[in-house]
Length: 265
Image 1 (cartoon, rainbow, N blue to C red):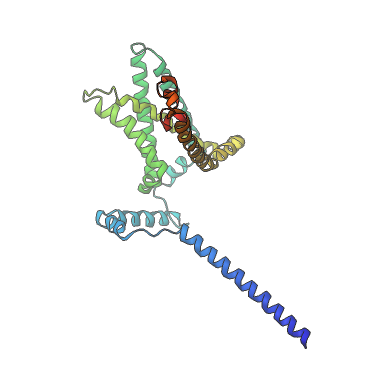
Image 2: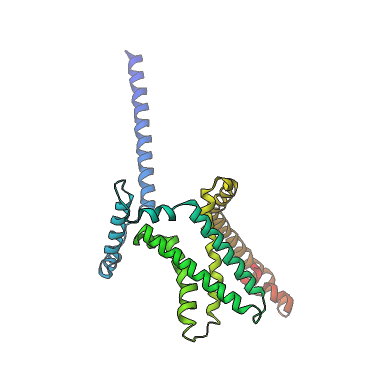
């Protein structure tokens, strides 16, 4: 009987330990939810409601849910099939590459030579990408615009193409500074990633792109830690070198260690 009591005590102890472990685990999960879950402040929700953004968000969600159903019938099914095809994506990728190639050639060419040719090509590309934008809007619906990559693409189509070339330039406005926006069209090269992801011939390239994307956050925190270390040693170098009386009149030393920013870099 004493042996059975000892076994019961040991089993109670094991049960207690298991309960404690469960409580600790649940507490850990609760703490994790405390950091991962974020409740929108009431004042911010009120602003969204007053401005109508909350209603717009609800409509976007409802439209996306409706289009995600298997029973949804796209009113432009034939256009949807064309725009969603790999051939269409490859064609757009070739156009983007050609546009970036001509942008580079225009930047390296003298201003007076072949200006008419590059201007004509620019109008052609603006029209081509505008037609592509309209086709995607018609095929995927108005909610397509509210996806972040598509919003950025819309800015590139209108902000660097349609508005400067077809509205501001005919109005006689000076586009000297706005021509810098033309360089932003090169950002559309990111869209080629979509084609790379779909074609099996670029499997290795897609793996490389995934690795680069996944390494952004570790590299960011590595940069933060490196800056902290540089800042600490920058302060130390300023105090021990730049502030010494021996080097107060030395211009070279003050240029290198006169303040923490100079000492850091």
